[in-house]
Amino acid sequence: MSKVITKITRQKRNDERYNIYLNEQYSFSVDESILVQYGLTKGKVLDEWTLGDIAFDDEMSRAFNRGLSYLTYQMRSEEEVRKKLLAAEFGEAVIQEAIQKLIRLGFLNDAEYSRAFVETKKNTMKKGPRAIQQELKRKGIDEQTQQQALGNFDEAEQLQLASELAEKKQRQEARKTPMQQKQKIQDFLLRKGYSFAIIEQALAKLDFTTDEEDWSAMLDGQGDKAWRKYAAKFTGYDLRMKVKQALYQKGFPGDIIDKFIEQKEQEHEEI
Image 1 (tube, rainbow, N blue to C red):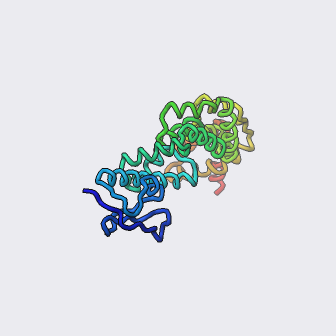
Image 2 (tube, helix red, strand yellow):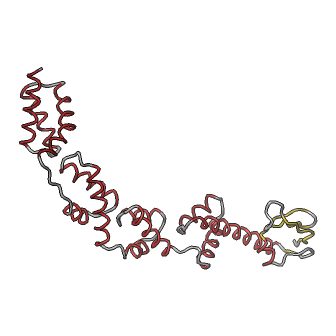
Image 3 (tube, rainbow, N blue to C red):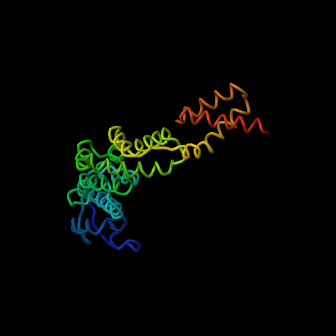
């Protein structure tokens, strides 16, 4: 059954949308673009098929505008936009049409997004390819596009960034033994997304030389802590073995440990 447009008014809160009245009663609202597209004017007769088309196209227009607004703040992946529109309760068909329009007009491009994402992550956070690829995957980027975006992140650049991170981490862990430092650096670089091969090369560039004074400084903290822990439960030979085992596992040399234990036993005897 056909209906006649009897009145069209501009909305007060959104001057780009119009209220449409059919047969003297409010029926629906549309964006200005839909008003123009369908030539909606007072007196125009609309059948049920046309009304259905108008409803779909207006919904798609609203989804497109919502997606465009979401993209205004920063680049997004297609999947991120899709999730945003789903959260806004747009239908699947409407979302697909809106996304295709955003792609056609150049607002959405997963390849460009991925390249920019890789540059940002490696330059601002020094992340390795594995971590970046996992993030791209979570954002819905397909594997081929992931690989293409990471194609220019070569091993030389990876080693440079990993080495910078390793040097900084070594400074932070300066009061730990070389063994502990290496483990801390390796774990840190793995979390950052670097491969074992790159990590080994980065570690090889570091100087882990430690003199007796350095060992003594490290023992002031870790050695005293181990001694207090085991002295509360053990004495004599058992205490020496427990402390020696604990410090050896942390990477302290045997002769350094023996000197430390001798010093502690002397201190105990003097009390």
